[in-house]
Amino acid sequence: MSVVLSRRALAAVGMLVVGCGHVGAPASGARPSSPPTAARSYAPPARGNYGPEPEAKPTTLERTALDVARARLAGGGPPPRVSPALVLAARELAQRAADGDPDPLARSHLRAALAGALAFDPAPAAHLAVATPADAPRALVETLVTASATTHLGAGGAVRDGRAYLVLLLSRRTAALGPFPRDVAAGTTATLQGELLGLERPSVHVTSPSGLSHEIALPRASARRVFSAPVRLEASGRWLVEVVGNGPRGPEVAVLLTVSCGGAPLEDPAALADESDPDDPREAEARVVAALNATRRTHDLPPLEPAPALAAVARRHSEAMLARGVLAHVLPDSGSVGDRLRRARIAYARVAENVAKGGSALSAHRGAEESPAHRQNILSGEATQVGCGLARGRLPTGEPIVYLTEVFLLPVEDGSGDRMTPEARVREAIWRERARLRASPMVSDPSLDALAREAAREMLRHGEPKGERLGERALRLGRKLAAVDAFVATKASDATRSKNLADHRFRRVGVGVAIGESARYGNGLLWIAVVYTD
Image 1 (tube, rainbow, N blue to C red):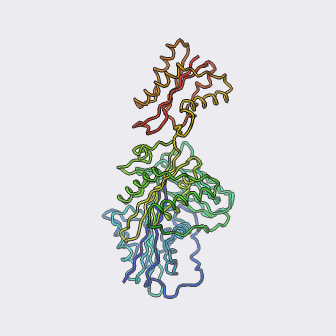
Image 2 (cartoon, helix red, strand yellow):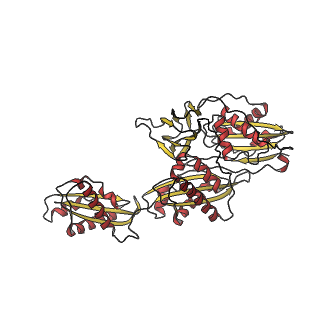
Image 3 (cartoon, rainbow, N blue to C red):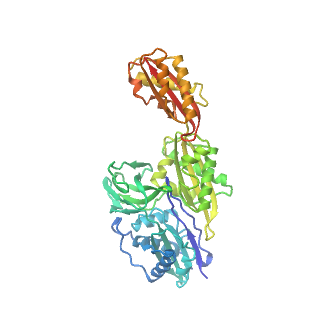
């Protein structure tokens, strides 16, 4: 009788995230008869660079599994291609299972196996079957979905005491990658280049051994799908290099590379084991918030404040992803995170979002932290609030699956809790900027204030930041010179983004601010009208 364990691992977005599934220990009948007492050493990493496929010759067991899986996944179309890199990675994971590892497909094991095999796939689904050698291949593919988007696959096997341990890795590749080194000396600069497939607008992100992440600027002349970026690997340690592309579902991770600088191990020695969640989903969400704030403390960043309204928006998106079985930032019936916040009437100055899936909420979050682009969101110096929401379900194999959404937000400076009115804060920002420019002080004119206030209300009512008539009205007051600025802003200081402020001919100013809801721009923004005269 066969025992089948299935796990869907690292699924990215993000913006993007990477989620990771959970797999339990094999049933008692699937364990080796004499588990090893010493640590096993696995095959040495494949030689070469990321990009080109390494050499790998599948065994008879592996070839049988590949043939059966390709036939099942073809679905009447072309079957997925066999990737030698995924074969090598799957083989290492199968050996871990045969050696009695209680969680052979753990997130850290999978990432290290992919790196050792020179596989650049960010989100392969991993399946494990334990059965007799004759039954294992078909037992493995029984759980596969025929309408799969898989483009590449690899199978790896190990046999012990008459039992076959067979791992299948499935990937949907969305990039072609040029050669990029996996093992480098400290201070190396390597060029990451390639082309997105089915995605566009590439961006490159890096996490250094310190745990900090940043984006590498691409040349403006870059093609819509082609990317080329110099990556400076100055410090010894484990680096993560990532390429993100954009498609109909929003940002997606297309490439994720682990780079050993100065002989560092490919597997993160500080990686935490996947953990199960508490039964109460709200407690599980709170643990995710605690985990991301712990990461922020490591880098001397203040904690993010949990926002129940954001959590409710995040929770609804996780439920929508679960219902569709799709990990994405953009769903047809929900739109982007900005669309969802506007429908919930939540104003924001800036917003970022991570989505992930895994066997638990915390496991999904740990996967997100491995993605440089998602880690940038977690370590944002701008966000002050966070909302985490999850949705729980089951895979066809019966294993638990959790979809997780994390929303990071910088709220609008609407003046709530501030003694100063929004108009007073705009004036203060204008005075400060005028002084910084060493221009003569301006006088606040009550007549101009009244005109600007009326213009701001008109802009909000019509939903357009236009103030043409304001200048005409100011001239009717007997002024010879007038200029107008109109803004839809998130903070009072946005009103200082004007060339008029530096004009020494202007001596008087009027300010008007309206706060309200706009179908086009969202809720709670500042509609600012400023008029300058002599």
